[in-house]
Length: 208
Image (cartoon, rainbow, N blue to C red):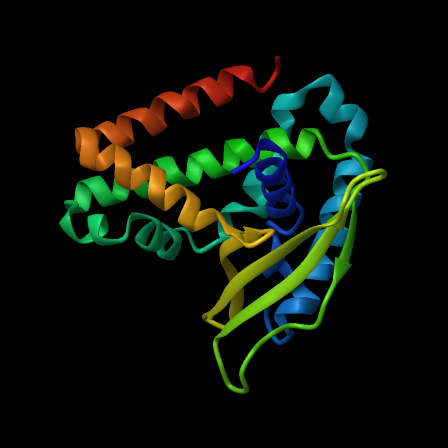
């Protein structure tokens, strides 16, 4: 996947990270738009504060992301068959490190936000279904628009993100391939160790 696509995908994840704030008794597309608008306002309002102390971005991400993504379902899907063969302890540690990876990656992307525009399309959803796809496009000055699709499911009446695709490339599928290769080559614990090390590097570089 091209770096530009990855960065766009991560940024769009950031902009809709808190979707469950308005998730009850509304539709997924309305939830995405309301929250994206809210997150953009938050970034603009705190720009000076974030420039002075970039580590404060973690407060924003922890508030908006952690409660509203279904990390357990995402972990199951990204690991595929390796989820079944993992121990309970390995599953628990993987979920924590995978969640941390996404949060710290989101944090860096949020700091780089620079007035990208978002176009929203009607939700794709079968009547009575608890699964939905919300399609959007992100545009920047002088750049081609990037189609971004959010796969969501309803859990306890709240709509939560379980996957994001940019230009047809799935976040879950991308990580699934690299994680599967790592596990096959060096074992499950090596993947956890690699994620832990990467998370430590991301944390140390947030202010650089």
